Length: 67
Image 1 (cartoon, one colour):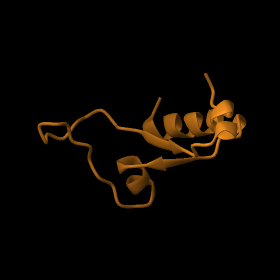
Image 2: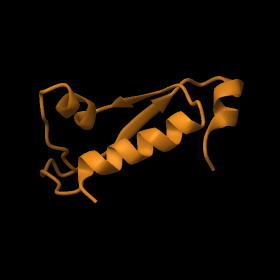
Image 3: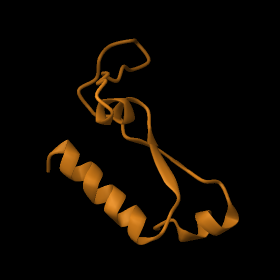
């Protein structure tokens, strides 16, 4: 599965559960036209994409998160 397809799939699952969330970090930058590579703790570019999400930290929203 390509990265864009994987992101779309994950967002679809989260949306089906009505979770309020944002994609953040390097993937978010790339989706907005400013791609940036992820780096590890040794400051080396990693081949593995780093997909970060933020969800609204309320009890109601937390209860909708898929398990």
